[in-house]
Image (cartoon, rainbow, N blue to C red; front, top):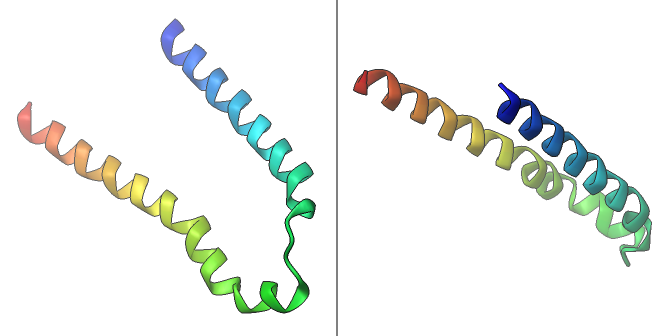
Length: 69
């Protein structure tokens, strides 16, 4: 139980730190306004794809674990 709680706390702290870095460093990126409208589809895919891949991987692992039991 203690290991899982510490893991969750580490994930939350690292996520908050990454969010803070993105918030501070994002405006410093040299993107002009025409590029932001053209890249909306790519940005959406880049944001959503990792979550979908992790979710699919967890589903596959769960199915494999149920079959082996």
